Image 1: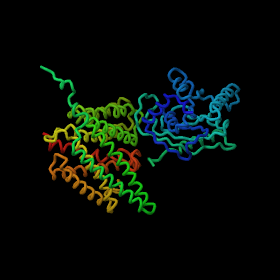
Image 2: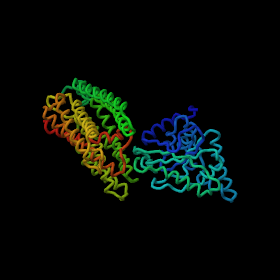
Image 3: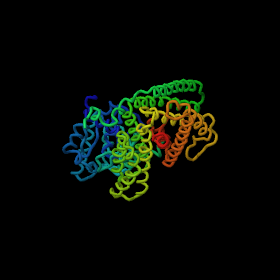
Image 4: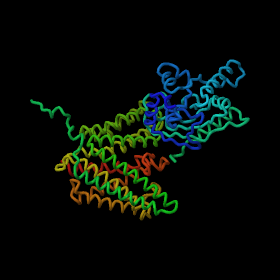
Length: 219
Length: 332
């Protein structure tokens, strides 16, 4: 199983852990070899690598990031995303269409969710940034609806909220050189879909689950 | 003019690697080893007789601290044995990690990113490089004069004026404490003390030993007798009993260690008194910063102790004082 991890991925993960000095806290769940969708706030290119490298070694080979196709599909970025980290590339914002009546966007949105569900298969987990883009780190943006549709499509999969702290200060959007501060990654208790809950309420609950993982001081 | 082979070797090279393993260095480390063995035995015995949850928590923390002391002593001994290069690498790393913990706690903004890059990757290593090439004049002013004007200038160039003065001041303060002040410890290695040539690393060990023993002794006296708090709002663990007991015993220890130093016995006592009092103030100041930021420790990398900066806060304050006392009175 470990043979599936690209050697460059290991190097990048080790460097990212060194730079981010990440302290990992499992609150409300433990690392387990079961299918999960880890969803977190997004402020830095380091987010995915740090989250991925925080998983126990044997889980990494089974965990893939979801990345925006428009950003990650060309040149070296494409090599990193597809060959090194086996990312699932999706068109941004299309999942919203899955719930719409308009035939075209419905089909397109549906196919994205379908592709994600397929990519997970029987064993793989996903790392998902439901804000859709990197924020400044001050507030967590509204969640896009992909998480909701995916959760409905794969009710058997556990949804784990995670909060990444300080990575926006270590490598903010638009910078290429990181400043090595200490970061904290907190995994929370699984969020379960509830019967009859609408999309908006579910997404708000998921977002609050991430926000609730922020620390007060350094408790 | 004729050149000899010696002229092709950079100045200061011979003293750079493999310090002569001075017998005093070995004896001092033998003493440290003895202390570690004794404290490990005491810690184990205390753990055995401790009953109740509160007592248990104290002994568990004590034993975690002792385990960490073993590791820290081993690392320090190894780098001292490698000589000037080893000490410089160790202290550069300590400055880097301390600064990391400090800046993590201090709010900076997006516009500070490039300034922080300079602080971590250019200014801090340069400070230690200057010790490496024995350039005292530049070492002494790099951070207080040049970084002092560079930091606000770089932030201004980035264009974000919100909390401008605060941000510039906080970064400069961190650089002063974590890099400038701390670098005065390995800077002892460039002092030329008449009659004490080649033994500078013993002096560095003396500083670290007295400073850290003072911390330990203040902790022990405070735990045994501590009643009257010195500054309850800043640090609930600092008591007058701990302070007086710790300073007195660490000063006695320093006086006893005069055989390893270029100082007479009374001079060594005076030096140790200065080290311990400055060290106490360092701990107090860094505690105030932690309280202000609403945290207990700067980090959690050293088991039982907290962060790097929690361990070396006293050294940051003691090192410049000790360095300049030695330089003023013992170097011509």
